[in-house]
Length: 486
Image 1 (cartoon, rainbow, N blue to C red):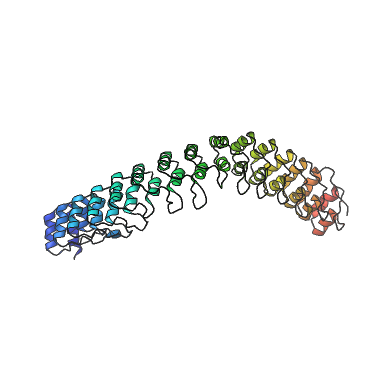
Image 2 (image 1 turned 60 degrees about the vertical axis):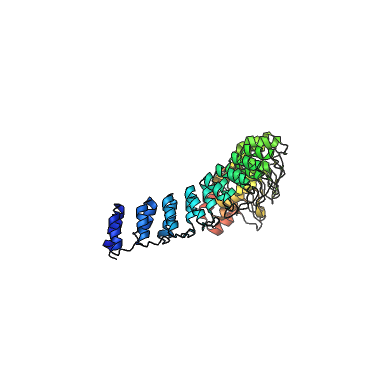
């Protein structure tokens, strides 16, 4: 077939010049010719509801099951456009009702997705299989629910569509907030407690979405609030995590248990919902309740940096010195995370500044993590500036070893001992000199009170001897000027 013949054919179709279309067919132009988009004359007639063109194509032997782009057939095209007369004509001409496109979608699925009830009815009467799944696992019923097409949902259910096939109808209704479809499914008696593919019940999904009306309907239909998902979470845990006080109240009114594997107070604290915290405390949950990890609500709020929540819990009597199973108190967490406001709040309410975990207290942690604002607060509130690190090094030695003059100033302001010695009797000055840190040595000479410039290490070496060995001439000059000897 010449390209010009095909061009004439589709030009005549566009102009609805069906006499020319018939003539071209009679002259041998294939009735199943494709446009560049792999659309046939029959598909065009099906899309626009042109029975004249559809009948003309069928009369000249058009294949009603020929698949074009993406595997679409004329029947699918007609179903998508809600062309009931064309659908009837195609079916009478032998169109196969259960042919699927490249995505596994049938004409029935297309019609259900579009909410085309009349077409759905036609296809079912013609033998469309109700429970086929497309490649995404959706059935015609699932697709009708996605659009909240109540009449289509009712019809398919009455015709025998399986509400448990594919992804599960109730879960889809909840996910799509298809309230009308949900009502029909519940009226039909679908099991409200059957988990979805992810192990969560429809009630859990309704809770996560924060859709209180759906939660109420599911509970009224017998949804069990204490069922657990694959992670052991219940609907109540999920509601608290989301901070939905109204849904928490709905669930508790329906019998949700306060005894959970998760600490509800901790979850509420992380959510930062004061009304929810107040409600849960009013239910009698002790404020210092610990979860399996030993964390309290105060731990959770501290970890998430919720300073207002921390303040609220402390004013309600939360104990700031409870350690979790890792040995961490809220103050240690605040030091590690770098939350100065929270550290101050905890100290104001009696947090133990010297509590240690694995040999490290809050001062160690703030120093090692570089949280200088926290370190300053801790030192001002009584933290020991001469805390020891590995091999007996003090914080001042470590700062000198790293060249951190600002940190050294902070420690000296807190009365750190500039003459302290580590396990090898090295002093902060020796550590700085060993690194040839001229500015650090100068800082110590000028700012460290009562600096012992001639202290000796375990081998009997003074700092001057060490720097001469390392050939740090500028430091040698500084030390000699300050009165150092070997």
